[in-house]
Length: 325
Image 1: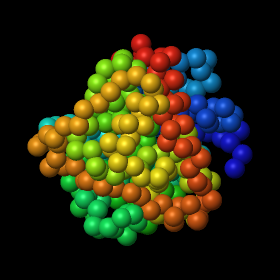
Image 2: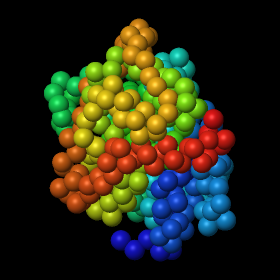
Image 3: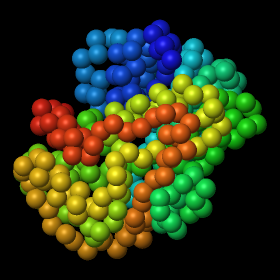
Image 4: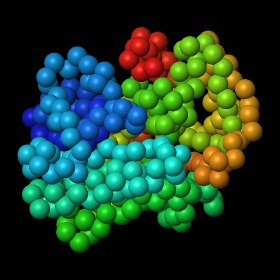
């Protein structure tokens, strides 16, 4: 697809994934508008788009506030809906806030698209979290849904809205179920976005971090590979109305990941600890994505190895730590 001059909206575009996507699309010549309500506690960071010199337009608003976002949404050819709250513990402690961010805002946006721009291509960032503890590995899209926390329930509902609007109203929506995404511009101040973020903070500060359990297997997606997947989904109309898993690097235990990170960084260290009881209740254990359906349909494949991705990520934060800690 030729992206030059294509009007694109990215919700959550000041956050981790959204900013990387915005920078890629701006580089391809797209007319990018970012919509973000700047919730810094969930990853929004002005430095993520630092130096773009006006080639990315920023609208500071909640995507659920129609008056503020309508002009950009009505003009967009492609809408990447990436805004959301990802902290599992926060969702358990503030369930109504999670409901507002992850369900009500999404439904409001979809209603706006349905009324004012039903021909837009819409890509929604969903999650593997709502599969719950896997009954088999790797997990394909037919796996039963058993969300282990409030965040998972709300994200599944948001995904369901997107697919319902495709089925009933003909909206051109696709959902991608993401696993552990990592890379430059992720939140590393704490573990609200991903546990790997706080690990990276510790290695660049040359301190020790905790690994809970350590034998759980997980797979990871480097953010630039995910950007490739988002673009591939938007360019492939055969994905409309469907949800697809996105994986990436081969699975690894958390202990092995910690060893690789410390070895790659050359600094920091870790200690194995027992899983905190309140977090153990909502942990899914091992997870490995079967993303063969998306790969076969679109030709997408991850290109970045885990060690290389970690090295690039550590280098980014060593250069920009002041803006992220």
